[in-house]
Image 1: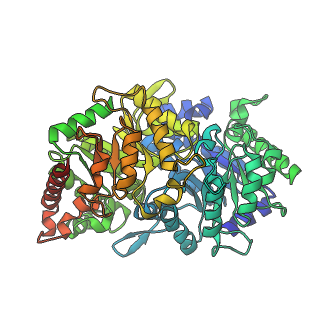
Image 2: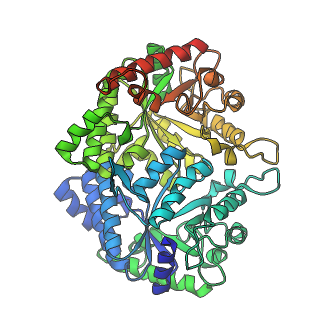
Image 3: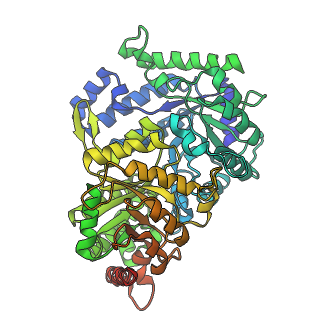
Length: 305
Length: 305
């Protein structure tokens, strides 16, 4: 299973973290932007090209430190078709460098439409009997709001094409509790209900690592809820956003891990991408700064495991 | 407000329906596919080109009958970058023909990421001080799972750029109740909680039509829930999927409307797109068949209002 591949890469690098590649143009160092604008114009195309150069520099500096990258689709869709093209280029480059690619898309819809999303990212797309890859990644994030018939098409492709998903359970943002923490009439909270569903969906997809294809998104900012969620989904990998810039620290993410030191992969986006903006780095050193921060984060996480 | 524009177009055409433009390649008539494959190959590019020709034919046949179209992003993402490009082309063409464009993307994320999605579709994208359109539409669908700080960035752009959103409240699919119908400890259901939030978010965005920028997705397949939801969100427009192919009829969608005959726009996708596959139509008549079905649907809806 695809999650076994993720576990292998985490073990090989001794690093349970994932670098979020969410490049707003404001994060890109000036010298890269100037060059791209002079070649392609100060517009969506120039911005996309600058983002590509930034991404490539980051991946080159990180690929032997982190096991995985997580591009956030929003920051590519934002630059229109040029941005989409750079997303595809970034995914291909990360895979070429041996990285596990988690595409953060949070897609969700009714069954037949969920199937189309799943084929786009996890499965294959049929054109009159022939199969094609549209935007192939190892793993995507999925929003469980539509219920099981909106999630199962993704799980089907996980099994058929050896892929994985992380389903939103308890998000990292301040207002995540408005819906996710609501208490239902049997006393359990919405995120617990979702966790029970994820645990069920995950059965039958368990690989040799002991983990299954259906993981969960559990925010670093809610360590108490993570304790409960870890128990409810023992065989699901957790994708943990909110470390660093959003305020969660290594102690906060500890409950997301199992006692074997596995079971979670912690994301840092701005913390790594914008490391050069802190301390004494020059902007030309953005990649070196990102690498240093990725190593610091790795050590920080390992110190609590 | 953008919703006023939608109401104007609905009144002008006497038609509270929206044509879903969700073209799987299997829906496209053979003669269109053959031509596209011979020019571009039987691959993602050829499929995308066939879909474009199909979409253009549909829009040409429908633009004076329906007030709006709703492309479903999944069916374009599915064909990779070629598909995305055809989505952009379809949106531009529909706008050129005077149609109101609702892009069904169900995007959702934490605040800063929701901002990026909102800029991509509703707002403007800044590149070092200059503003650009990435994929501009009149309206998108939004998933409320992350809570208010994931929805408010969209509402901000609705107000600033005169746009609208439909937030998922009660979806049309069989499993929508698994999460959306759960009863909370104060006795109200999740979809009711969401409806109350939508109603609050909608305040302050009310236009001269009496409706606001924050609408709701309410499935045609759940008429009883629609009665409750209509009362909870009197000033929100409803986007109503599930008519036709999913089993909801005109009587079923009636509770989604207010007594003024406004307040809802009913979607049909396969019913219109694939009308040529029923009855005595030849595939060359796909556009004529779509038009006939759109007119039949309009009459059907008006018969219960």
